[in-house]
Length: 154
Image (cartoon, rainbow, N blue to C red):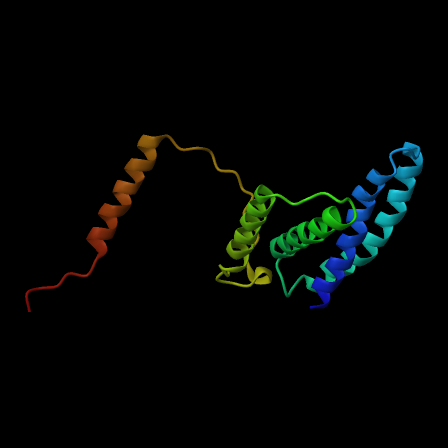
């Protein structure tokens, strides 16, 4: 729960850093950039601990999906209350697709924990010609047939 709370706070800062300046279009761009950068500092003060605390309880991909869903929730509230813009049906449908993403990310657990998975083998092997692959597969099958235990009628 601590991770989720930190991510929500982080996203509030992020939304204001990225979009809050749109209400101040007369302000000089340099001023807006510096103000947004200052707000974004606080976003990082919450986002980094959230990811650090959450990793292990959640996989990296799960953390990212949680963050994206929370971003849209916070953004939805922000755009309606602060910017005064309505949410339309297509916005809600797209949010439902994100909920589907959450299901697919959390609904299927890996067979082994993330920490226990072996590293990906980065060895590059030369590509075999299709006839070679077929021939070697046929030889393997023939060898396996010869080695299988035989049952006599009794």
